[in-house]
Image (cartoon, rainbow, N blue to C red):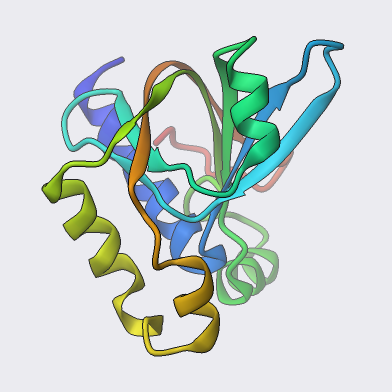
Length: 163
């Protein structure tokens, strides 16, 4: 993957996470039945096709990864403004989403830099009751390596020039 591709991927995922506050991670169980897990604490590295996410409450994800470490991470820009502008103009200004094909590693303790990153992300909502219930126990992360990707596209609405 070229560096400029990774920069673009990071931009689209950042826009999607800003709009929906999560990405979805698809995995399969031992019977090859799919499960999709929403993860709001996914972070991408600046220069290499890899990242990490905090894994605290995702029982199905944890069970599935113990048997099949490959996953599909999907991020969709669900911003109403993005969609209204695109529908009005009949063209997206950028891809509306992406699927990353990744291999996800084992659970490991988060380091101080990772804890600082997640605390910055949740800072605006840290005062809420829900935040205190679900975001106060971040301790473990999983690293992932991206080995492929596919843009989410819609016919006729993609710009003529490539990104």
